[in-house]
Image (tube, rainbow, N blue to C red; front, side, top):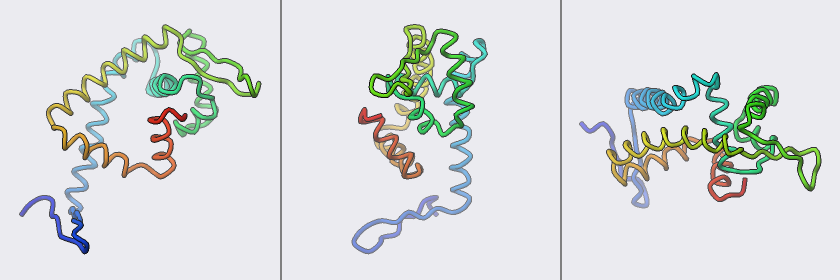
Amino acid sequence: MSEIRNLGGQGGEALLYLTDEQLRQGIEAMFFAYRGFTADPDRILQGMSYGRAHHRALHFIHCAPGTTVNNLLNILGVTKQSLNRVLRTLIADGLVESRVGRMDKRERHLHLTEQGKALEQKLSDAQRARMRAAYRDAGPAAVAGFRQVLEAMMDSDMRHNYRALREGRL
């Protein structure tokens, strides 16, 4: 019997049914894949006394230059205290610059410095190499399907943020 059963639904749509064991295997694969995906940047950051929170901040500041602290809080889903600790370190180390808002002086807009851009590039290069190899091995149909699965797993507000980021609206 096939691992995945497609049963024809009404209107010609195919419904996908997976066993609990198959879903568990997918969950386990996701955990191990995440470990691999973060391993290379973790090694780079370890020598700098930075962690994944620093990486995520650098990544999203790079993706949305000039983003506000509040927007970054929303994207990362962390506490203000936690983000402030990370940002203080990145600013003190010359990787991130905080600029006062033009329209609202209470806002702080975040930008990577040249040094911050170089580190973000190094971290992203490591992850892109891993993704590129995996995508090449899996093939185009799997790449499209994987992206669909990831988007379907996102909560609606996260999917909204993801799409806004992709469209340059964040």
